[in-house]
Length: 335
Picture 1: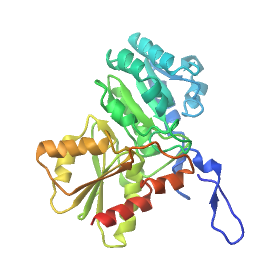
Picture 2: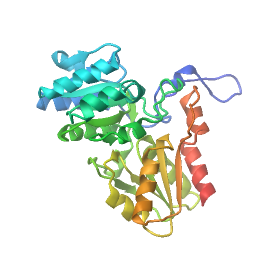
Picture 3: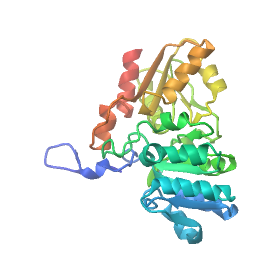
C-alpha cells in the first residue's frame, strides 16, 4: 500500500515508499506472498521441486519456501548467470527448479544463459520474476518494460503474466504440470485479489472472458486486467459497456478465443498491457488479427518506447497511461 504524509489544508503527498512495488489500491483486498505459499504447497506433494534465487529470496517471496524446505533452497548469491546455469543442470538431473530474481536481471543480464542452457535444451525450469513492467519506481535499472518481448521470442519458452494473488496461486501448480521452461511474471508481497470475484480459474494457454461488453473489448494481461475491470465499472456510469478478455498466457497465445471475441462486430478492441508497446501482447494480438483477416477498430495501451522515469508508482502509472483513470480517459477519447 502506498504511504502518504499530510500537511494542513493539502492533499496527501506521496513519500518515497510509494516507489516500492505495491500495486494495490487504497482499501483493496490483498493476500500475502501468494507465490511463496503456493510453492510450499506444491513442494509438499512434489519432492523434485527446489527453490533457487540470486540474493533475492526475501524480495521474491521465496524465503517462505526456504524456511519450510531449507535443504531444497539454494541461495546462489548475486550471480544470475550462475543461478540459471545451475538450475539447468539440476533440471537435467530430474529436479524441478523454481528460480527467482527480478525480471530485469533474467531478461537482460542472464538472457543468453537462459537461452542456451534452459530454452535450447528444453529444461524443466520455472523462471519466476518480480518487478515486471512498471511495478517499481526506481527507474530503468529496475523496470522490466521489455521482458515479455524478449521471452516471447525465445523458442520453447511458455510466457505467463498473471493478474493477481488468486491467479498466481493457481498458476504455480499449473506451470509445474507443464513439461518445459516457463517464464512467469511475479507480483510479490501484499498482492491484490480481483479475479476470485469472477469465478475465474487459470488454465495455461487459455484466455478467459472475465466480463462481456457491447461497446469495447479490452484484451489485457497482468495488472492491466485489474485496471481494465476497474475501468469497466467506472465507464458503466457513462453508459459505456466494456468487456474484458484476460490473456494470462502470452505464449502460446489462445488464438481461437481472441479471434472469436475480437471478431464480434461493432465494438472497439483495445489491448492493454504493463509492457512496452513493442513486442508484447498488443503486437501479438495485432499480428494475429491481421493474419486472420479480422479487422476491428484497434488501439493499444502500454508503456512508451523510452526509458521510464523514477518516482512514485501512482504518479508514474498516471503519467504513462496505465492507471485505471488513464485507461478510462483513453478509451473515452477513442469512442
